[in-house]
Image (tube, rainbow, N blue to C red; front, side):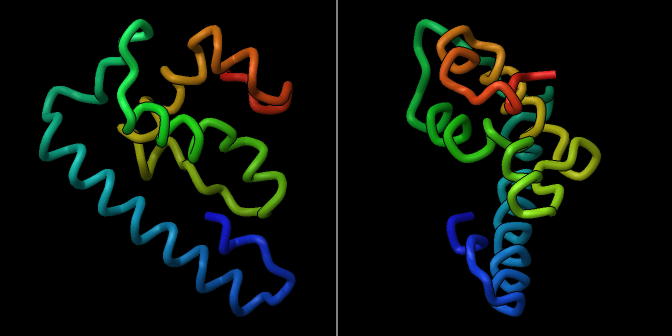
Length: 104
């Protein structure tokens, strides 16, 4: 996602496509591994992947404002969106997020 920060439209467009490709793979893998839905979030025992998802997708609303692109679409990536939402509601995630990124 860091590649999306550029002033060259062509490079930004390519980076956005790359992000969506990787998100599609992640969502597909989640559907295969978690047929019952999004992963459970254990606030007392977060894993490395929970932290990575929180850091990458937690501030999705701010990313949308900055990049002008809806990156974490609820319809397109329901499991990933649900996971990020659950993580954003954890007290320590909510306290560290900018006010524009608070879980809705």
